[in-house]
Image (cartoon, rainbow, N blue to C red; front, side, top):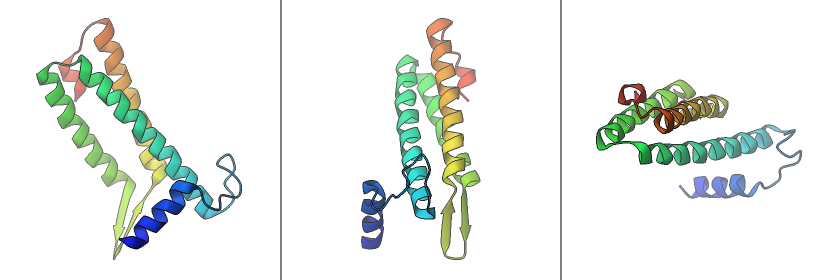
Length: 123
């Protein structure tokens, strides 16, 4: 676990990033930039999810929560590969799928604010 904490600090601090995220030159620069983009995308989906929850009835919140958990499982399954002793997360895949889901949630917010929330569309 200590090794993971050190790696996390190096990634979070951008230590050694030579080309910047506009043009990451090395593999580890790319990993850093892809991680930053995923973290930003993850923050956005969480914010949008909380906004949508504010529009929903108790039943709607339950349906949304169930749908969101199923989506997370699907995203993780599609974007993660587990081999003998290693796990690989495709950050491009995870970011793309998260951006798509954020768009879906934003559409539900627009729907709720204009014509009312349709619970069956939360699935």
